Length: 147
Image 1 (tube, helix red, strand yellow):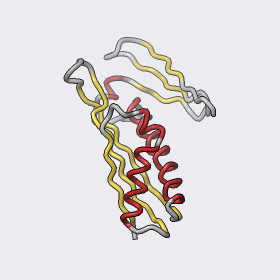
Image 2 (cartoon, rainbow, N blue to C red):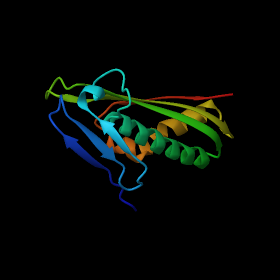
Image 3 (cartoon, rainbow, N blue to C red):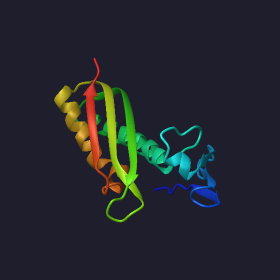
Image 4 (cartoon, helix red, strand yellow):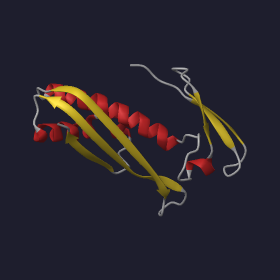
C-alpha cells in the first residue's frame, strides 16, 4: 500500500509566524497556515491541521460507507459526508487538543431501509482507517437517508 506525504515550511514564532503546507505526493497545492488563523472563527484564506483532518476523514468515511452499503446489499447512489473537527483547550495537559469530530452523512441509497443505512453508517465509523487513527477523539455520526 502507498505512503502519502505532505511538507510544511514554517517561519517565525507560533503567534507571529506562518507556514505553507505542501501536498507533496499529489502536488495539488500549497496552502497557507498560521496559528492565529487556526484559532480564529474565520479562516480567511488559511487552512489548518483540523481542516486537513476533516477532509481526510470525510473522504475516508465516504469510501468506507460506500463499501459497507454494498456489502449489506444496497447501492449507494450518492453520499454527502461532512466532517467537523473541533479544536479546544487541553484542560489536563495544557495547550490544545481535538475536542470532537462530528460526521454528518446524507445518502441516496437503493436496497437498504433507514435502519440498514444507519447500521452501515455506524460500521463505517468503526472501519474507516482515519477513524481508527483518531481513537483518542470522540466521533459522533449523524446519518440519514434522503428521499
